Image (cartoon, rainbow, N blue to C red; front, side, top):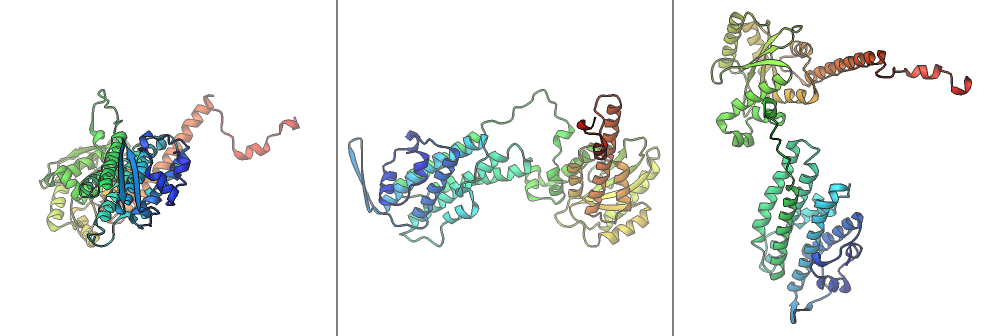
Length: 451
């Protein structure tokens, strides 16, 4: 039996007899191309659905085999169970090869079993009856198996090129699926179905072992520092006090972790950042420009709230008092330019409350979403153009909109182009790089045959 033959097999009498007499897949020579591998998987998955979900009529009511001198006979549902064992066993063998070997080196088509609409058909419908409980149990097991290998496949594919948050979601699906698969296999009844269930559980575990068999090497020479801890994808979730991060860091630590992450982001932009004491009537971060040409200081008030932040009266009063203290006590610092309120989302009354706070404190105040700062850090791969950042803050509305991020990014890109042009011009003048030629000059130069 090779892959081409497996891709053509059906539920005819000859094919079913062939399937029922197949040896374990490990002892078969399943040679063929990657395209044939996917075609065989698609055909086996189609047979799986027909036998289990559609309850397709089988051409054989009775099956007899001999092994080690003993005869075995099966009838009715036992024949269907034996057929499912063979189909699932061969599919499991091929899916391991597909995920672990073929997709490591080739761009291969997605099998039908990995299409959400297709494998959802395996989910049993309605309450089982005594007559259908056997197939309901195996249907649930089948769904959990395909769901798990689907998630494991994308966990492996995305492990390298995509950021951690996207990969972690598929890993979450994989781990949940493995747990559900193991639990469902304990409920399966029927001799051949139990053997198939064990095979499918072991197959999914083997795929997971292969995927996680090459963890990145720990670089013992690399000292972990501040920026090793930046997790931009968590910034907005921390501001929202997301349940997953409360579970990870502890409910009481979310506020401190948010302030720490925010400080790291601002430091990565090239600012000096001083953290104050959490829980006291002070702002959370004092940000000071590191450039002699752009002397400025601004304050950041970081707020973690499960709902929209509304700038309550006590916070407004504390901010007003602290602004006064900063002006009086930190007179040697660059002048205080503005205050940034950073949270997940503002309340509808935020703009009006900011206007009152500005009047009381005599300093511009702006609200910026935590996600905007994370997005800004992702889109700017270098130092923050502080002059433009501050200008965008001061000329923006009380609640900074998405145009705020776009304006800063455009300015950064313009400065990068100017620096690149300057460097290339200097290198060209010294003969390190060939001089750039304008497109118009190409048309004005004589062609070789004109000399």
